[in-house]
Amino acid sequence: MEKFEVSKNMLIESGVLRGEDVSEVRAADSHILRRVHDADYLAKIYNGHLDRKEQIKLGLPVTPKLYTRSATEVEATRQACHAALQDGVAAVLAGGTHSAFKDHGENYSVFNDIAVAIRDLQVQRPGIKIMVVDTDAHQGNGTNHILGDDPSVFTYSIHVDRFASASKVNGSMDVETVRYVEGEMYLKQLFTTLAAALDVFSPDLVLWVAGADNHRNDRLGLMQLDLKDFMRRDEVILRAFIRNRIPVAILYGGGYNRQQEYTAKIHRNTIATAVKISKEAKR
Figure (cartoon, rainbow, N blue to C red):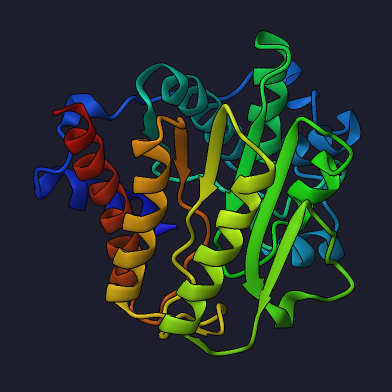
């Protein structure tokens, strides 16, 4: 959890962001969460009533702060989507909890901020077309499960094949890489398939779950990307959206590097690249 504060400090101390560029938010209202999550599940998290098995599946202990922290993350993503539609690009210095289902959480994902934000947008902007681009090393199975039957949403996920398990849920386009894929092969697969996705679906907004767990030193990602590969990934994806005036909301996604500062650094670099390209597009 330290990565969130560390990456924020990196962004401000390096001058990428000013303090006033970062908006603090409150927890999402319960009625917004109920657009996606079952009331019983919300009550379990709020009251700390998950049993031992449920906590192990979630990967987090239930504490009094868990509900508020998770609901605040949802609100940040919700607001970032509206900001992206207004300004062209916005980012959450957290977010991307793509393994939360309607009635349970998995893999550190308590509430599905992606799905909740999309349902909120659909209420306020009927007919909006949204694409989820998920380059986290793990599949966005919860997002796929919640949004899978919605023709106005396209879910793209590229992930390592270890996670094509019983918990896998097919999305609009799922791309599986080999385990320990090298950066060059990964990027070629990513750019080719994402271009194909954009050929068949024209979004009004993209939610990009970036992910830092593709790094070669990550404990859970099983990929072999280095920092140069991440920079290339971020440059190509962000230029494709920003130059084509497709609004994009950036979410951190996962990251579990053996050197903790690397996770924060990768997230910091993604935001820095977005700021740079956004400024270039306005010239």
